[in-house]
Length: 562
Image 1 (cartoon, rainbow, N blue to C red):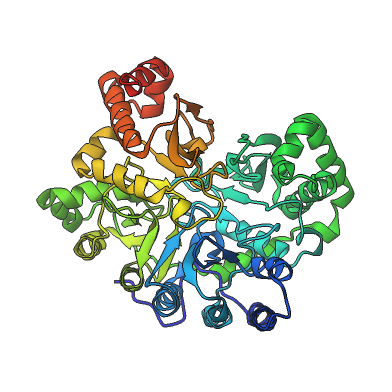
Image 2: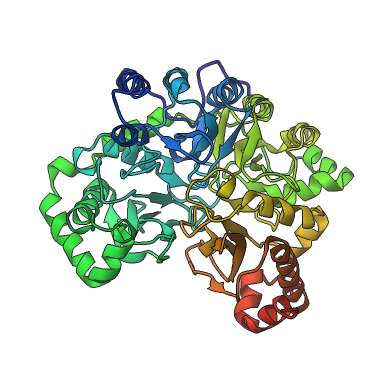
């Protein structure tokens, strides 16, 4: 067991007194703003930019508070606090998002200062979760644990968090700005569909450097990020990002919300001209003022601490015996467990996608249970994935069966990570004021249709992503199967796309045909899967089969009855 001393969590950045004072001051500042709004001193229009700076949205039915989980890493203590807030101020649950944050959907305005105060007690806040600022920097949910990791992205994500918070030049950008960092050979952070995607790597001398992709994004106009520099040395990491943001701040459009994202600027200027502008700005900035000193990087890295791993070997006898004796456990290991960089350990994904469940939702009781399991088996540390699941990143292999047994007993042992039941979905019309259609009921219906774990494993890697409107919060553009909710004369319809890919081989899915109803969508997914299974070669993924046979057979089957 990996029990740890209270207050100490390996792998989680430790706040100092400056961090805590800053967060506490922001809470009191917002408390006064809420009081002025409640008294009528501030109108909603005057209050809106203030609440957005503190993660508070006004949705269809209530206020929604989005809590920041920097780069998706949090402690068991913090998760217990989220559970407590969910029970005390919401309806007993929270919703984990595609930006590795958590949302409460039923918040009362008058409660928000108290909630933020309670969050501050555990070094949490809601800053940079909304508004036209640099949002929560995301990274690989297996950061610091994955066997294929080259560079620990948490360190550089934290550097960006500190650099961007309260940066005077980037507090009011033309639009929101999203950055993702990946430090492994595989892209598990979808970096090329971000405003800036950073690929951290090492050169032949072992030095850390970064590849920059700029201008990616989904939404109304999806674009794949363009490569503007293959190697930026570590010492220039901040300077180069500052140059990108300065160019965006200078040239980005503020007259049209639909053309304000950096992807539009890169598209209109052209990759060559945009790169030239950034390089010229970078040349002006480069120097001692913006140099990222090695001692600063080392200090940030030190603040994360590190698990006290024991010397173990892979595949211990008890682990092998448990798999042999229990096929359900063996399936969960095969699907939800990732190889760890330290022998004898593994990273386990806790699926928040039970058959027929709401993607990303966790009750307060489940959060408390998972927090206990994190303390018992993963050094008190957890991760939120952009696929809306949770991860225990450092579990001893000989404790995986105990962990799975506890998860299974509480409806959290679903073996579907990366499979067809692991659906990403936005809140949709059930909550969101911008949505055209409901996402959640459709996700529930599809996951119920494909509930059989053995069938899911047979189908293999096949990501479904659902958005309730063109803003694409469910990332439908890069789903192997994407589903977009549309409004047709007051009725909800769904447009299906196929062939999307969020990895480094990024692809935007193609529309398969006319939009269909919700019921027809479930049948259409079934038809697409049947065509795939009847055409695939041994070991071939869905998107590979699609590339080989083309859209024709899928389109023909889906629309045969129309």
